[in-house]
Length: 446
Image (cartoon, rainbow, N blue to C red; front, side, top):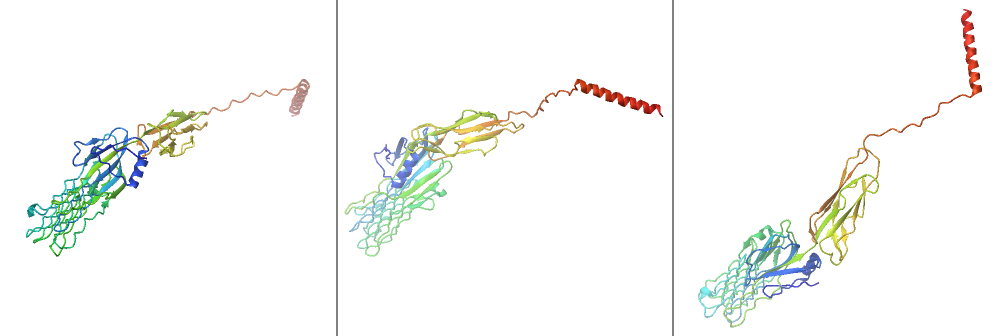
């Protein structure tokens, strides 16, 4: 999948394969918008994150170091600026500030005074160090300035890319000047990333010889070092060191998939050219990643523990799910005897091209137990890098008891009183009469 880049300065920065893959995964196939700033087209005011944006794909590249001047042969090559690619979680309404570092100036030699033969360091939040002038006793090559660092900040999260070191000036008949190192010095999640630091200046020798290149700009504790001076016929000048690159997250603006590279070409000197070429300017590019907003709701908020009582809860996205569907994790209250669930396992998946996931159903258990305490079932959407959490992000269903606390005893069925037939009644009467006569006779004999 390829996202169009609409850049303000016509440049199209290259994306490393790993960063491009991460971008595709984060964007979920939705539309994107990219803004780019350079020293020639700087940011005039902070950018405000638009509604519907959940992340930005960031490219921050420092300025390149300039090329060292010649003295019979060319000086050292300046290093291209470091580039940091990353994805940053953002929230609508947050502001983004950015600044692109400029490339360092090339060194100079013939037809220049010694005080002007070192190239100036590039501007930036972490400026490049100045290249040193040639030695004062004669004409040699001046060192080039280091590139300035570039940065992007949103919500206290930082991405900073260090500038490249400047090339050292040539010292007549000394060994060729070594090119500035093009290895990215990168540290993720370091608090010092918020504090810029300038590269060190190159050194100027006391006699005839080339000046050292300036270091690239970086962050506190990780700025480029200045190169050593040269001595004609004996010692070549040194090129400046690369400025440090870094990232630093602050919740909720977390940074993921940071990759640091040095994608540009070295700044090559040109024979018999005075001054030598300047380094290429840096840039800052960020791409708005629009993401669906996900909510959850239940059609009934209250149930009783009787038959056919249920609530249907649905997860809904504001836009159709991308290729492969949209996975939405959520939490649900602990199980309880008063209810059961159906299709309520986390995560639920909104099918590709649709806006709703299969329903999660809360079913009240029918019983006649009196005095049970009401139970609340709560469903809560949890965070993800694939969508924005909207409102409501939580839904609750209360299950109450509909059986009162008085138990009515069962009503007894009346039973008929036994009765005697006619002959039984006559016999009973005779027996009773005999008993009375016998009792009377015994009393009279006393």
